[in-house]
Image (tube, rainbow, N blue to C red; front, top):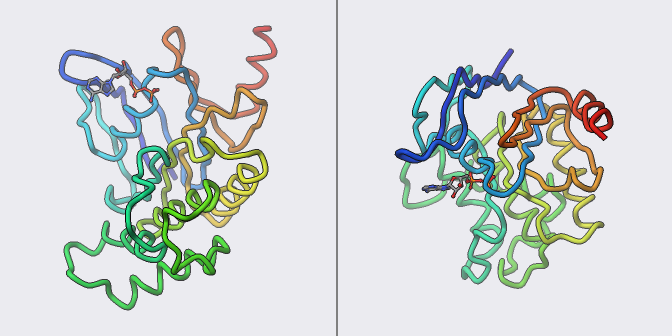
Length: 226
Ligand code: ADP
């Protein structure tokens, strides 16, 4: 069953149209990589799906999914690395999405945060300061944080940015495992350029053509075009 449907959706800012007439269905269990040059509208699409901007035209339908139960992992560069908080505090803040305003974290929220730290094998970092972590560790913390908001859909914005090959592979393996466990993934990535294919579907945004389909069909097209 489809989790999200974009029906003839046009997205942009006031008079500046960025994406026109997008028609896509994201099925439960999909792992969709969103690729395209800088400025092609990848972030705009994500903002549309998260409900941060309204479609200028068309409709985004959510089936069996509440917008505030979407886990979102921003680019590491958009998170203040010197934020004076412990790993556990950062991960816990991911639970705020679906608990409304509460001055204290509940026992359930704490359990959830600890479980996600365990799931990503970073429980040992829980009392460390976020500022003292390596790039790879920070990404795992942000991933654990975004998991606190969701059991259904995770949206990742270039999660492997600035990581070395080993940390990148390690992070991708974790994301693939989450997908195998049933979490639908939408991931903005630049890594396709390096033949590093991951996921079952590709959404490629280019001015001349938008492609949405299986990763295998996308690769076939690239080879055909060469
Ligand atoms: P990408 O994520 O693929 O790099 P973006 O979605 O960030 O692309 O940007 C697509 C276009 O929308 C660009 O031309 C950018 O300048 C424009 N844009 C992005 N954010 C805004 C905004 N808040 N207001 C106006 N224009 C914007």
